[in-house]
Amino acid sequence: MTALAYTVAFEGVEARLVEVQCAVTPGMPAFSIVGLPNKAVSEAKERVRAAMTAMNLALPAKRITVNLSPADLPKDGSHFDLPIALALLAAIDVLPREDVAGAVALGELSLDGSLVPVIGALPAAMAAAEEDRMLLCPSACGPEAAWVGACAVIGAGSLGEVVRHFTGQQVLSPAEPGEVTLERNGPCLRDVKGQERAKRALEIAAAGRHHALLIGTPGSGKSMMAKRLPGILPPLTAAEALETSMVHSLSGLLDEGGISRARPFRDPHHTASQAAIIGGGRGAKPGEISLAHNGVLFLDELPEFPRQVLETLRQPIETGEVMVARANAHIHYPCRFMLVAAANPCRCGYLSDPARACARVPGCGEDYMGKISGPLMDRFDLRVDVPPVAFADLDLPDDGDPSEVIAARVATARDVQAARYGGLDGVRVNADLEGTALEEMATPDADGRALLSTVAERFGLSARGYHRVLRVARTIADLAGSEDVRRPHVAEAVSYRVSSAVP
Image (cartoon, rainbow, N blue to C red; front, side, top):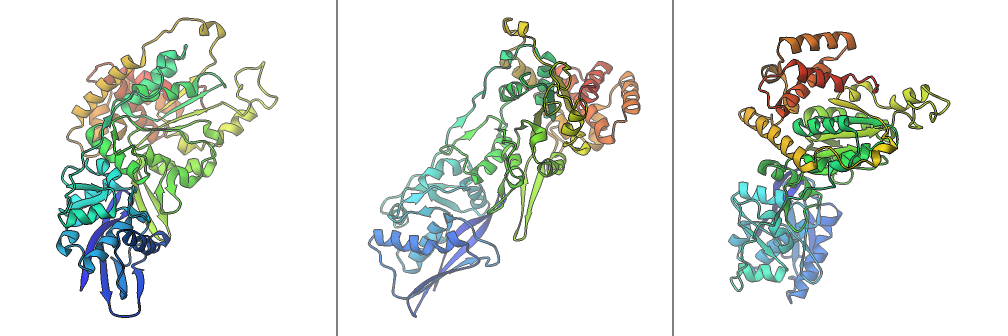
C-alpha cells in the first residue's frame, strides 16, 4: 500500500503542491526516487537513511520507491528531505498515514536527524493554507511561515520531534510570527550640503515612485543622496510587505523569520551579470529587480553597466513583472521598483569644466552617455543635473529639512494617492497611472495644458515622455496639497524632463 505526504515545488513566488508517494514492496533492497528530481533531491535518500539510523530505525530489506507527483514537474531543493522521510515512516507504519497526509512538509535533514532551515517557507505556507492543510517545517522557519494566519504552522527541531508529535508523545506548539521591524535605513538627507534641486527631485520621486537619473561630476554627492533615499520612503503596507517577503523568502533573506516594513534598497555593482540583475541562473532565482520589489533599485555608474544588461530593464520598468524564460522553466517574478541611477557626464567626469576636462571634449560625453539607449533614457521621469559643490558650502551649517520632515511630506502624498486610487486595480501610486485613469486624475488646467503642449512640440516629447510628465506633475500637486494639476506643477515637472544638462 502507498503512503502519501505533501510538499511544494517553487515556480517563481508561487508554490505548487507536490504529492510524495512512497511504496515499500517485496524485491531486492533498493531506495529510488523518481519524478524529475535534481541532484539535491536524489541525494535525499542518503540523508533520510542516516537520519532514521540516528533514531535507531532500520530501513526494511525491501524495495522502496518514492514518486514525486506530478512527475513532469522539475523538483529542485533539499526541502524534499522531510516529506520523503514522513512518507517512508508512514509506509512502514511508524506514523499514522492520515495525519501525515494532512500536512504539507518541507525541511532538510542532517545526518543526525536534525532539521536544517530551508528557503521558501512563506510561499509554502500560502500553498498549505489554500489546500486547508497544516505546514510542518524546521523550527527556524516557523516564525516566517506563521505570518500566514490561515495556516497552522508547526516548527520542529528534528525528525524525532516530528515522530513524537504525530504519535502524540510530545505535541509541538504552533509557531508564532516573527518580529516586524521598521527602521529608517541610512543617514539623514540633511547631511548633504547644497544640491537643493536634486534633493527636491528625490522627494518627488519618493512620493510618486518615479524613476530618477542623477548626472554630475565626481564627488558632487549623487551616491550620497541616493543612499539616503530609504530614510524618506514610507513603510511598506501590509500587502506590500507580504509581496516583498515572498520574494525574499525564496532568496533566504528573511532574518529569523521576521518581516521588515522598511522598503528594500538594492545597489548592485556595475559588474553584475544579466542573471544577477534580471533573474535566472540555477533554478531561475529572482534577480536584483525582483529583490527591489516595492523598493529602490540604485544603479551607480549607470553607463558602466553592460549595455545588454541595461536594455533588459526596459520591459520590467514598464510592466512591473519579469518572466525568466529558460529551456526548462518560465518563471514570473514581480518587480515594481523605483529605479534611481547615477552617472558622470563623461568618462573623465568633468565635461562642463574646461579647466579639468580631457582633450576629447565634447566627444567623450557623447560616447559615454551614448551607452544608455534612447528608449531607456525615455523611461526616466526625472533627470537632474548635480553640479559640483563649492568648498565654501562645505563649511556651512546643516541646512534644509531633515529626512524625518521630508518623509512626513512623502507619506502624506502617498496617503492621498492611496485614497484616490483605492478602487483602481493595479494602481497604488501616480507612477502606475495610465489610460483613462491618467486622463481623469492628472489632466492639468488650461494654462498647464498649453504649457505642456508647447514643450512637447518644441522638445519633441514622445508619447511616453508626455504621460510621464503628467504623472510627475500629479505628484508635485499632491506634495503641494492641491487637488488639481496646475501650470506651476507642470512647469516643475517639465524642468526635470528637458534639462539642458542631460542628454
